Length: 70
Image 1 (cartoon, rainbow, N blue to C red):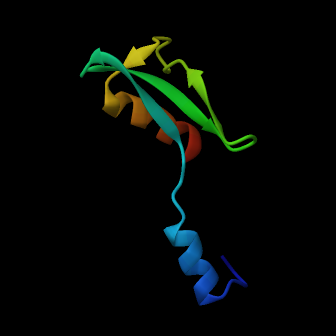
Image 2: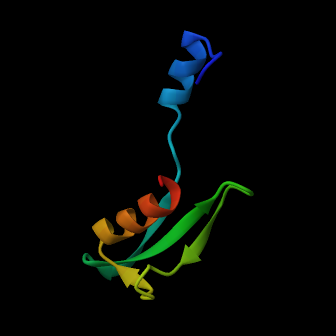
């Protein structure tokens, strides 16, 4: 963040990163995944990397993190 003031850097650090949202399916181990679209601020239902529509919370986060944090 070259050229940023300390206040600007702190504001950037404190701003949450929206990656995904989990949807309740009635099963604690299988959740729906929706990616956050920064283009319009909405969540888009998505498939996991393995093509399934539902997965564990950990697998949902791993999928979103691989997309947004790489």
